[in-house]
Image (cartoon, rainbow, N blue to C red; front, side, top):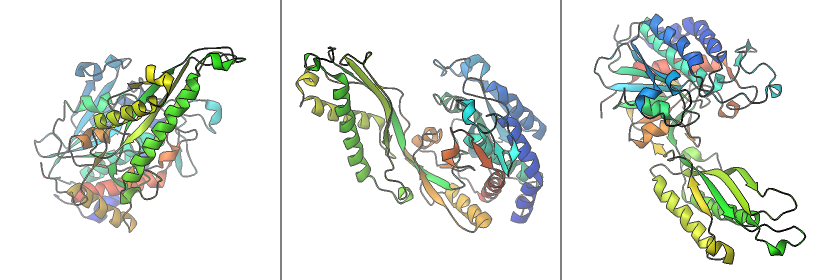
Amino acid sequence: MPVPSDGQVLAQVDTLAEEMLTLLADTVRAPSESGWEDRVAGRYADWFAARGWPVTRQPIASSGLAGDEPRAAERENLIAWYPGRRGKPCLVLNGHIDVVPAGDEDSWSRPPYSGAREDGRVHGRGSVDMKGGIAAGLYALAALQDCGADLPFDVAVQLVVAEETTGVGTRAAALEVPDPAAALVLEPTGGAIVPVSTGLLFFTVDVTGVAAHTSAPWRGVDAFERLIRVRETLAELARERGAAYRHPLFADVPTAIPFAIGTARAGSWRAAVPDHATMSGRIGLMPGEHPDDLRRAIEKALAALSATDDWLREHPPTVRWDHEGLPGWETPADHELLTALRSAQRSCTGSEVLTGFTAGSDAAFFGAQGIPTAIFGPGEVPRAHAPDESVAEADVVQAAKVLALTLSRLVLRDE
């Protein structure tokens, strides 16, 4: 049966729903924090084997890209092909199997890795980010397989490691699937379709000063006071950039390219003027903007600040770029991937919901290469990385239906 009917596909997702939610709960119970993805990889590998899909287990150590990632030899991507690798245009379904640490267990109402199914939700770290999306993607394909669908393209399912740290997993997976025609990343979006995402740069700024006893602070140079000026300068740059970039899919947020400082430290003793201060944070990148252009803008702003201060003129702030940056990207609204997603969403929910993404994800890897990309998955982003993370079972089932209809309607050209 080349193209099963919508009714057949949706009915099969319902038939598989309990099995899908069981897999989700089982995988949540595996505490696959970054560095320990092997705790869950075998469960997914067994699932692929039971479905008869060819699968490659790719240790990230073999890619030559692992860098300082710990336990590289024990951590592996899984790359499975539905229904097999036939040489047709390829759609990538991408999901990461690592999760962030649970943090203080006392802040959780249930054990962080309980995988409990209560009150219509699956509870535990990773249920939202992003094992719920992975389960929906796998069972969308399973439903199509059970219906005998013969898709006119290949599907490469990439379950990758290290998304929460360096993103090396997706970069390594590209060695196995170098030229996909499109990519669908299963991050949680609350069931909305994401065709555009801004990017980000992480940075650290250090400022030096001169220590002095706080009874005579004028004898020293307060590095913390200068660091505050640095933060104000960067915040103003971010405000100007945010005002200059407008996009209708970001209309519900104050800025599409947010700026935030996550950590700051100064000094070493409360009775001493701090002789060193440092802060680390992120600043957003517009779609299509090269990270080097933003780096130069930041350096120019800090140089202008330093010119106004006798101390900073001789001892300018130093900026360290903590990674290469995640580029922003946008897929044209008329691309067939988005057309199929929107059509499927209308059929399943009665309406279309599109939004923009301001969080970093592996979608940036695909989008930055000009690969048509979308993000779609169940679960609310604010629940990710938080205590009491959980996903509604109904949302996972609905996401699987949207994905199954999307794949059944997609006509993918190798561009």
